[in-house]
Image (cartoon, rainbow over all chains, first blue to last red; front, top):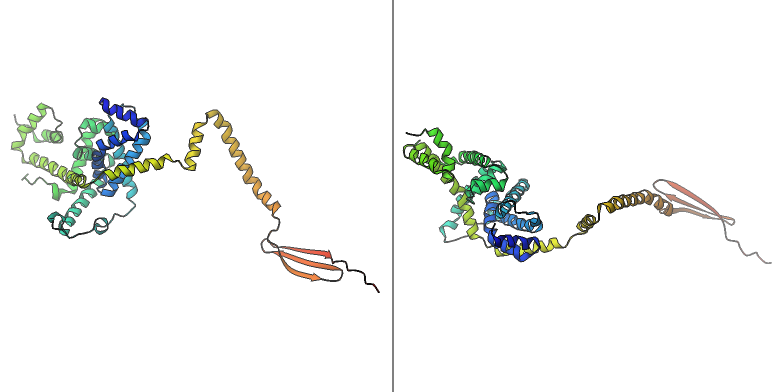
Length: 189
Length: 170
């Protein structure tokens, strides 16, 4: 942890909201990526980011610097997102019309058929990811979306590097199998 | 020496994630040109990564975050005004363990006492509050008034002397 970050955390621990804002400016996109990777829904991901920063402000006094700050933050985000997913399992998802609606547009990517294809693919990816255990899902999202190293994933999830490798291997295998029409390598085997 | 596919495939995840040692990297890269299966497996991993990552990157690009900070600020301000229950808890947190040992049983005893005595007091104070007159009979000497209550059924018959009349004078 560099000196600036240590000072920022210390100020935040004393209740300085400006320090929290600086942390927000530094990390909000990364945390949004993680949250979005889990829930794959804009509003839910934004709600999770909001919840994480409020939680952080309330609990940052518990951060003793034993792990790197960003892995602490990533872990908090992942736990919040996975808890959110558990809660939302009982609520039926919104239909495409309710969620975004179709609008006429000159942009070929905004054409209804393209949006539908895109949404269907997104729904399949989400469904496949939801078949993983929370640990496998966390490892895969940290690696594929945030590009964390095995060491960083181990720190953020509180396990060994060997466990991270195993979770990644079996997680990938399972999702590849579920999405084989979209991911198969295409070479003659 | 040509490496066996099974031993290389164990390294493929690490190779794909750029977590191999230089020796392991050489082993994999020597093997790949001659193995379509391992090349295909690597390509599948790459496709899967794109499938998982691309929509997330697109979502980040579309997003406007400043209003999220405003919501966070509002959320913190709301949390800073504790409710009655939170205030009670924080007050309990502040008092020492010794005080708690005395205070909590005392408060509990008072609450239990109130719960036990309140119904008794209520009964005493408001005896038959919903009695209603069903009959009233007047006579020269006595008057009779009958009260009744529905549940539990109670009937009160009240017999009392009538008003004394002025003696007639002749």
